Length: 156
Ligand SMILES: CC(C)(COP(=O)(O)OP(=O)(O)OC[C@H]1O[C@@H](n2cnc3c(N)ncnc32)[C@H](O)[C@@H]1OP(=O)(O)O)[C@@H](O)C(=O)NCCC(=O)NCCS
Image (cartoon, rainbow, N blue to C red; front, side):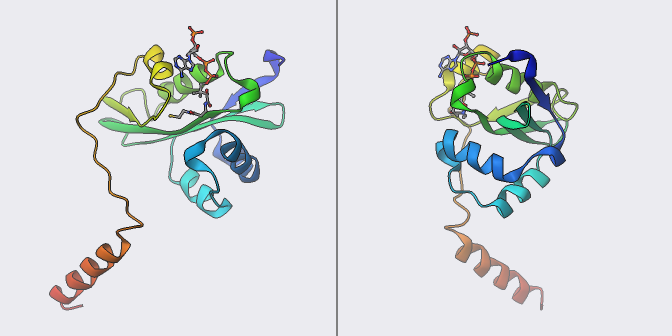
């Protein structure tokens, strides 16, 4: 790897969704098989979105959602296997954290299955007590039923 050719970008429109789909399929067990359309929606609704490039090859990606002041969450941090272990992942997360939408935020969350050691080196701490999850697509019927009840009670 020629490090001088590696560049970080915060420009969403530069991201080739087909390259991103391939990068996630190769490197991110939780994000395999995502459709181009859904990736576009995720990017449109995230800020910052940081990409890492070796010339025109997408080799790293991370995104966050943030209210700009109280809370933010980092998602989909990935460096292509051929480029790992040379400091890019750490720089990628630090680039996300230093973005204007992130740097004033009181608490930054992330979820990780295997990479606690990596994030600890950047300053994150284990946080086992506060997380709950709703598997929303599995509960879609419940949400739709509640919407119907709400509409009925509002006379809609
Ligand atoms: C996690 C990932 C982004 C790290 O990227 P990377 O470019 O390999 O990481 P870096 O080279 O910047 O590593 C920075 C430091 O963390 C250490 N590190 C990396 N992974 C680690 C781990 N799992 N446990 C402990 N330390 C780790 C490195 O040894 C390095 O230490 P040093 O500063 O003392 O040299 C990359 O391995 C990856 O994309 N993995 C697959 C996808 C994934 O699991 N993403 C995280 C989802 S939450």
